[in-house]
Length: 332
Image 1 (cartoon, rainbow, N blue to C red):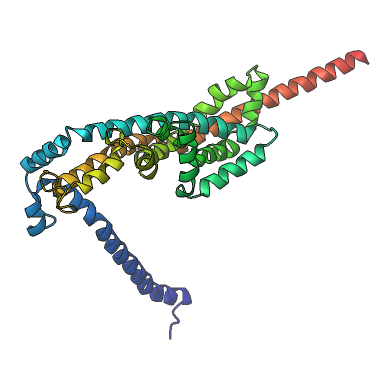
Image 2 (image 1 turned 90 degrees about the horizontal axis):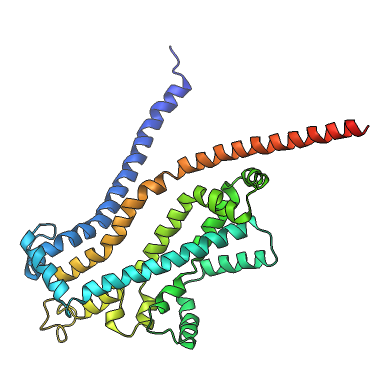
């Protein structure tokens, strides 16, 4: 009788259980995919139908392009075109906060990672604590501070509070602390670079991936911000689009039959407004994705630069040692 190897028997027994586990995982992922994708598909199709078609027709059916144009006209005619003002306000608030966020995050992260100064650990601890704190807990002190400086109802009441982005500071700190070679900086110092030149000519160009990452997350967070602008901006003409969507929702007859009875804002217009609000973030992601994906190539460039810096630094040290030995021999 021929004995069957244990490995073969084990392999035959393992295959069905392995296939079963993959099948279960695949089925679970398919269910989750349907659960999360169907609402997005419905949102994209809703502006193409009338309110009655949304109620009675197939939820995943397409209406007509003419209905999309009608919903677009109703949306941007709402309150004399205030939707366009909301989009412009969001762009101003997000863009202004983004510029200040990058200026603060990159310089602060670089200083915390590569500079030794008194109070460095305290600042780093405060940054980490602020990063893990819920933003809602900071709304009251921020509101009181803005009110003390008479900034309530101004553009700065939205831009300034989001200029300090603790997560961005921490990302830059980790990147410079772990990925920027010290030998490269030492070699540059020996070539005559001062600290500002080290930052602008060496550290900043090598940090493009993390800068892009901080910029993307900061812009998305500012664009989607709702609570603080809702509190500090009393005039609807100053609202960002997220706060404006709330006002648009309260003007819909489906949710407020009394106030919205005479308005042409229904579910198709609401769905279109949500899509318009999402579009800038989606476009930003599509344009920034190649740069974020190329972060690995940038890290390889850092490694090559580090190797070159190490070789240059080693050459300088060998030259110094040879010069010292020559001088010692002459003195002897």
